[in-house]
Amino acid sequence: MRIIAANEVQAALDFPALVEALRDGFRREVATPPRHRHVLEHPGEPDGTLLMMPAWQAGRHVGVKIVTVTPGNAERALPAVMGVYLLNSFRTGQPIALIDGPMLTLRRTAAASALAASYLARQDAERLLMVGTGALAPHLIQAHAAVRPICNVLIWGRTPAKAAKLAKALNRRDFRVDHTEDLEGAARGAHVISCATLSRDPLIRGDWLQPGTHLDLVGAFTPEMRESDDEVIERARVFVDTRPGALSEAGDIVQPLASGLLKEQDIAGDLFELTRGERAGRRFYNQITLFKSVGTALEDLAAAQLVVERV
Image (cartoon, rainbow, N blue to C red; front, side, top):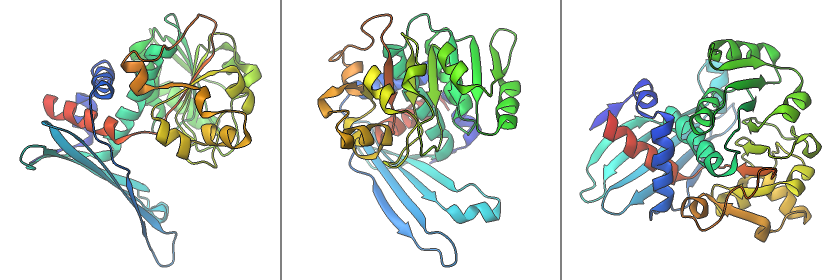
C-alpha cells in the first residue's frame, strides 16, 4: 500500500485535470451512502467529532475518508481537522493507497466550484473576488482561473493583514492579485465572487450583484451559517452540488427554504444534472447565477482515483 503525502497530492491534482475527473465522476454511477458521524468526548475541553465518508464505483475502487475534528487542538498548536483517505480495490478489497486527507479535500472542494463555474460563469469572466483568507482561498482562486480567463483578483478578509499577505503570495505580473477592505465595491465590480468563510451572517448583499455575476458559496456549511442574504436568493438562478446535502446542511439554502422565500423546485439543478446535460447552466449573458457547495464523497473518490493514477 502506498502512502501519499500532501505535497504529492497537490502536485498530482492540477485543476484542469481534476475538474475533468470530477465532471466524469458526476456522470458515472457512484455509490455515496450517508456519512457516519460520532462524538468523541474529551474531558476538560470541547467534544471532538469522528467523520467517515464512504463511496465506491463498481469494478474500480471503494474508498473512505476518515476525519477527526478536535477543537481542543487550538491549545496544542495543532490543526483542528485531520484525516486520511483510504482507497481500496473494489474487486479484491486490497488497500491501494493511504492519501493525505486535508489536501485531497482542499483540491476537490475548489475543483467542484470550478466545475460548476464552467457551466454557470460567463465565458469572458476576468475579475474574481475571493471572500475569505483561510486554507481554501488560494485553491479556489487557482481553480476558477483554470476554467475562466481570470486575470484580476481581489481578496477580502475580516483581518486585512491576512488578505494582504495572501495577495502578495499569489500576485504575478500576468495574474494580478491584490487585497481590499471595500467588500461592497469589490463585489459590485466582480464577474465571479467566491466565498469560503465561517460567517453566521450574510456577507454578500443581493443589491451589490451586477447583471452577469456568478456567486460561488463554499463556506457556511451548517444550517445556522450564511454567506448571502435573501435578496441574493431572489435575484439568482440557484444551483447546488447535491440536493440532499444542500437541503439539509447549507444555511444559504436551508434558511430561505424555511422562510418560504425559496422552494425546492426553485433549485435549477445540481452537478449531476449539469454534467449530464439534463439541466442548462447559464441561460443568458446578464443572468445572475449562484452555486452552493457542501461537498460529497463522490468528489473525494474521483480525486483519490486521479492521485493514484498520477503518483
